[in-house]
Image (cartoon, rainbow, N blue to C red; front, side, top):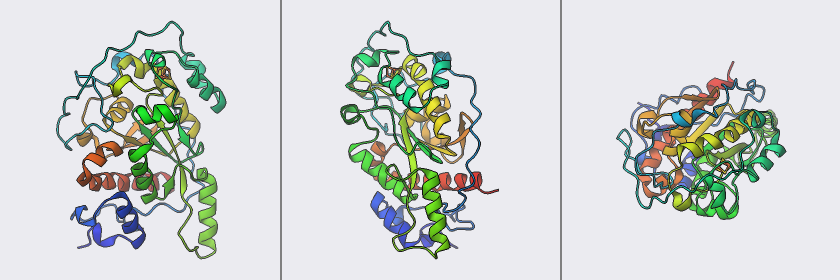
Length: 326
Ligand code: SF4
């Protein structure tokens, strides 16, 4: 019986090695994802299949009360450790008091919903809608291809992100890049349409040494400002920041969102369920399928769970194929 590990291509094995995944970690169960193309083959076709803009539910400005019922202890470790399928571990360290919200309001959710990229970026950079504006060095807007079939949503900026103004930097960012590379994606790549056209061109020419070009992906966080000492974001902060992410999703028009880390997942899906209970199936945010997986910071601390993360990436690839195939 074929197993996932048996059916990996050389390229996939190399990519998994880059992620630090040893193939003996991969599950023995027959890969249900290995259908027509073999397991976890990045979808090299279907440039035509960009879906229409997702139908956005009404702006959720008033969703503060419905924001995720996080653990009582508010400290946040990016990618909080979590045994799959088990309840959340209580938060760790310090729980500094949330700063008082300043007077200056944010642009209204309706105004944000009408913004183009430059206006949205400016609005975020100037935002004082919650108290995090008082402690941030700078906002972390997002990065990557602004026309992309793929979007990664993380939790909130950490110290390095706050310093550099970029999401997912440092060791966790490197691991994220390796995970994306394993899927044929890159935050530094062309927009999706360009990459897919290049792939199609290469396929027409019988392929090219070095493999197909990576496809672009857009990366953003639920919160655009760093919570002090990496404490858990407060429901009010999430609610005030949520229109920005919602608009980013509407502008990017991704066909699959990869939600990374407990807090990102719980915020996006409005649930307090642990990641372990949410993995393995597609959820929805703003009409876009959401696949749940672990935060790279968590995976750095728990390397054996990289195999589970790989399964999640495989599921995401399968969902993308289903999205793009007629
Ligand atoms: S976290 Fe979001 S809502 Fe709060 S100040 Fe920053 S950009 Fe504005």
